Amino acid sequence: MHNTDNNITAPASTEEIPANLELILINISGQDRPGVTAALTAILAKYDAMILDIGQADIHHNLSLGILFRTTSDVSGDILKDLLFKAYDLGVKIRFSPVTVEEYNNWVSRQGKNRWIITLLGRRLTARHIALVSEVVAEQGLNIDAIQRLTGRPPLNEAAQPQAKACIEFSVRGTPANRSEMQSRFISISSEEGFDISLQEDTIYRRCRRLICFDMDSTLIQTECIDQLAERAGVGDQVKAITERAMRGEIDFNESFRERVALLKGLDVSVMQDIAEKLPITEGVGRMMEVLKRAGFKTAILSGGFTFFGDYLKRKFGFDYVYANELEVADGKLTGNYVGEIVDGKRKAELLKLIAQVENVNIAQTIAVGDGANDLPMLSAAGLGVAFHAKPKVKATAKQSISTIGLDGVLYFIGFKDSYIS
Image (cartoon, rainbow, N blue to C red; front, side, top):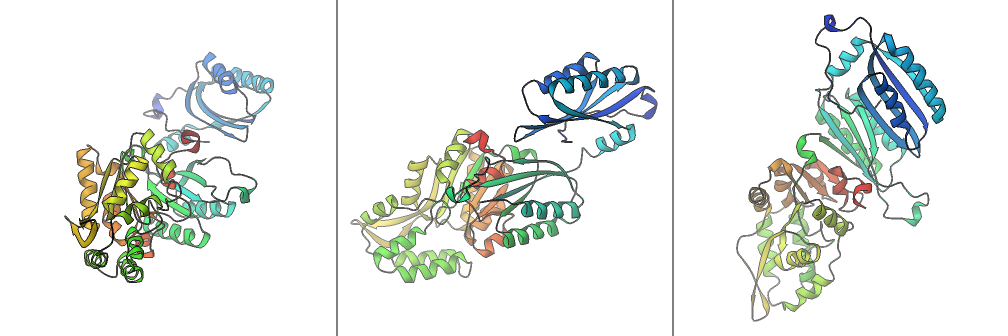
């Protein structure tokens, strides 16, 4: 039965419990149709029964409804008889199970335990994937309260939709026997099986995120802008080698930044507009930004790249903030220098906190998304840090990661369903 955390008050002591009290769980299954729930709950209302818990699911037009109610032995027989006849009229099956006071009180006592959200995300999810995750949950002594699909129904012809997405969300309750071991198991399974797994504590902040900050290069766009500029300047191989070393965390970002910018000296600024118009946008960015704006999120680009390209994306997709590095220009050409403070990893984390303060957003309500080593400080500072198609060092350090689908996968990590956002 699906637990819904309704306001449930357990009897204070056995002395207060009426001798004729009865607790009955009913399970209804069959072809779903309008009016089933209304008809059955009307019978309970007729006899003034108190509903203690209720949960309903519809799977491919098949109803699964569970109701736990409280009544007395004086009327319980009449209730069960009326429910049985009504179920027959409706063409559904009904099963009755008595629940003892002790069982009920034990169930109520578990309501205060921690709740976790486990999100499975990939191009396709199989029974094996679900089984592997479920095994880890069981090993950690957690109980699965609910499972729901966040994406639309998958196509039967997978080849027809190569960019299809699949997402399933587990709601589990309890305290993991070893959370770090559980996280490690999920990382291992994810790597071996080719799908993403997110483990989040289900706090109030998870349901009310308000600010999301993105890295730009290799996150919002599928390239490094400085590499594009370097190709046009004829120094592509030199700059690319420095970029890769920096993103792997092998050399200091600021040092690498100054070295790379110096190599761009003499490049005509008109090249930047041409590059901007041809930027390869990451899969899912447009859909994600449309949903985030509709939901009232504030969005920011915090990039170690350049303001010219960040501003282009701001105009194209409607970002609220852009903080990046400004290239110095003289006589229509790049000078090989930059203007102002370098936006490195430390600065990104500072900017995230500053924007949150300006927008009056608790830091726990923030999200950061990035791929490189210089993104780790802001991923760590944010309430939810997501490593996106990240370098190995970043993926191993970040608590959440997406490696199998586009950037709109972030929407599922914060609980959005396709039925709400499509």
